[in-house]
Length: 230
Image (cartoon, rainbow, N blue to C red):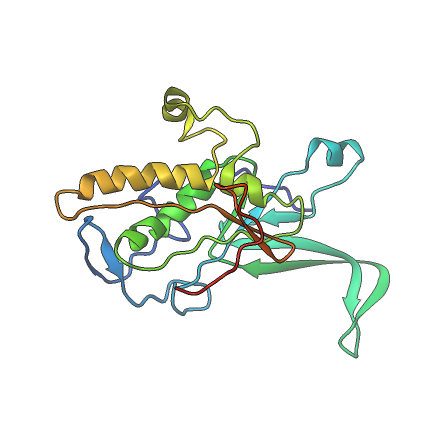
């Protein structure tokens, strides 16, 4: 029996599965460039970090009697799930067995449970992704999962939210805002501090790839755009 843990909140600067400090060199923003590191689960580079978010059951799922089957272990970097009624056969295929339940696990850089948005952003902060981008590195945060797994909620937040200045200032840290508005808030704060060292220009594009078509969400008239390399 596995009990689902509460969401693990990683405070900025605190120890977390993503907060290892490799050797770094200085940058104009008081941050240091990443050097070689062996703190990932595989003992290799931290060029790619994997964070698994375990979505809680929705109201409809609970109403129809669904139960949770995927959990985050207490170490904050192990995903566990129950593989019920299956066992690996002698030929390497999955065969039905009688009542067999197998606990399986996977180690990643961080595993986050619960619906709170702050731990997801704090995990990204601990990985220094925005600071690395300001130091000249290409950085991508890529949300992957099946339909309904929470990708849009994680990246942008709920469909309806008040993004007024006062509301954002009061609730950004512990509110339902997704990664994009949180990263933008940090971006403008960091660039404001870095202006004494360098000029800063911020530009943004907001694109959608759907059914193999590229659309500009900031210009609804631009649909099925052509993708070209710079």
